Image 1 (tube, rainbow, N blue to C red):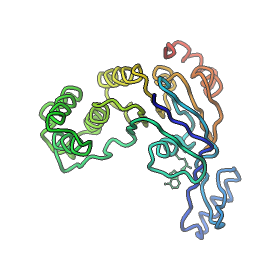
Image 2: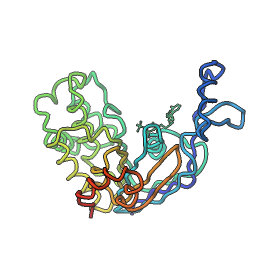
Image 3: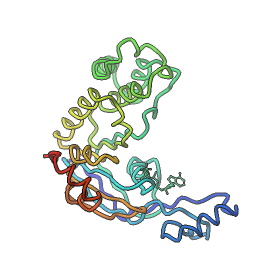
Length: 259
Ligand SMILES: Nc1ncnc2c1ncn2[C@@H]1O[C@H](COP(=O)(O)OP(=O)(O)OP(=O)(O)O)[C@@H](O)[C@H]1O
């Protein structure tokens, strides 16, 4: 049974070169609680404040909030890229993070070479690596492009390869930033089916997006983050009713909520 629990996660980013006059003015100009000082009295951006939630098998959590609210930072903390400055994070289950399309890929190597490299990294046997290559080849539908260096791929093609590689062996905890939603419509439908299949097998999804309709379709719980703090947590439509302007919420009400 997978589990992902955040208890009072807090993260402060130090502001370097803070002696500059313009930065001081910026900080003073933002009277909001977003800027502060750490224990060494250095200026910091308070990117996340006391974020707590607990997810178990079958939970599909959407992250919503305005630009700079802290969604990507939270995904990076959950994936282990950032160490929180406060709070405790506990993750139980094989975790895959799709946070940056090019992550973990060598752009000088071909798609096929990158898949084999991933097989080595995962410690797969030669037979399992062959299976991985076949699965990624079928799912990504990149055809002959798999034998070209990744630097020659379009951004959509890189997304196909990254998603196919990351999900070939279903992770128990999948973290996704919304770049994955930039794929074309046909691929999006396939990706959605694969994620749905993974979640049906009792796993966890955390997805950050600005698209209310995608969040309603993919998620069964929403965390609304504003200024690094939780402003809403609950059923997607209930949270979105508070988050969206009334007219946008009325339009959204036509979308079927996730089962
Ligand atoms: N490495 C960093 N150093 C300093 N500040 C950072 C760093 N990363 C993020 N921040 C700050 O943390 C805050 C949250 O940023 P984050 O990228 O998590 O927001 P977001 O909700 O994903 O935004 P968007 O919707 O625009 O992608 C912002 O104020 C940002 O400037």
